[in-house]
Image (tube, rainbow, N blue to C red; front, side, top):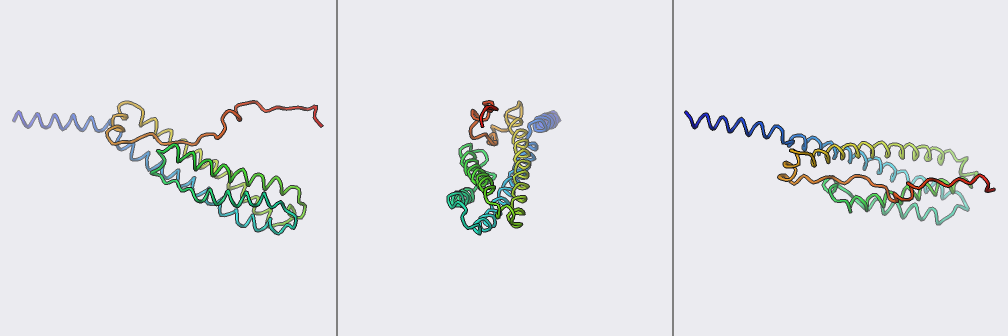
Length: 199
């Protein structure tokens, strides 16, 4: 009888301990983070899918800068070659490589759009205008998807670092996930220089 009471007592203590350990929260947040990451990838893929049509439309412009087109094509190839699965989200270096490749593609596309302003026939091209609007919409979607991913990672990482759930994280090897970082934090933290005297 006494042994039975002891077993029930141990079972109750173990159940109470497991309830506050955060195991189920880790499962929920891990799935939430993976889902948010899939949406980020989905939006980056949408952008990459627009590039061939954009390049083909721009190539129709007789004197368009070939170097700019080449940069866009090369940046798309590099961005498409780096695959970052949800399982790799705990690797900050893999995340940095992925971000760098996506940043190069974004930069090349921005340059393409800026240079295209110098070509009136291209600006008047309906297909180019439609692709430009789609690209701008996609960039907005990428921003929203990245923000959702950042929030998911933050929630997961807080759970992984908080007591007592950090003990569960250690036992089950739940490491903090890598978030997005800014490529050149010093450059964006400096105030912009404004000179109204320049002509």
